[in-house]
Amino acid sequence: MVACNENRLINQYENIPMFNWEKGYDLSYSLNIEDAAAKYKIMIGLRHISDISFGEILVHLKMTTPSGEEIEMPYILEIREKDTGDLKGSAMGDITDIEIPVEKSFTFPEAGQYLFEISQQMGQDAVAGVMEVGLVIDKLK
Image (cartoon, rainbow, N blue to C red; front, side):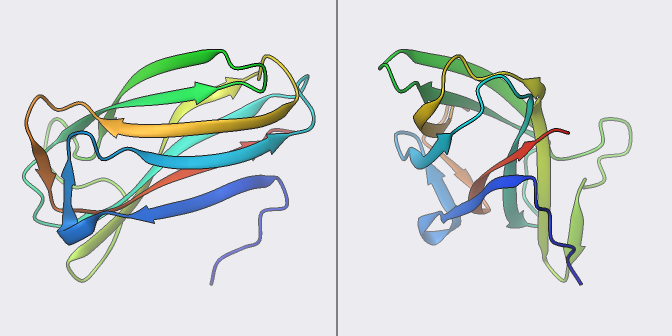
């Protein structure tokens, strides 16, 4: 049973064709920010097969502001515990879900419509085993 989060502004996942996240396959999300003075928690969600061969995935989150400024933020998404190699997140069968906080107290520069793009930056043509990538943003109280 999943609890409803009234502070969740977006929880949108996009499918990865054939579970193979190819370089150049950028995922797009759009969100209207009404309260630019508030603080927000930004997370990147992953659904992947449990036998994925990676311990971490390098990504860029590009944010385009309502005035057209582009801000690119690189992140390392750790999907395995470094000391044990165990998967982080919650697993059901051979599928694992994880939401990774990338900004814990973020303030948007202005109110209005934002465009977000997430791309993988692993230095290889594709990341096999990724099923979906999501953008999750909560407004902090």
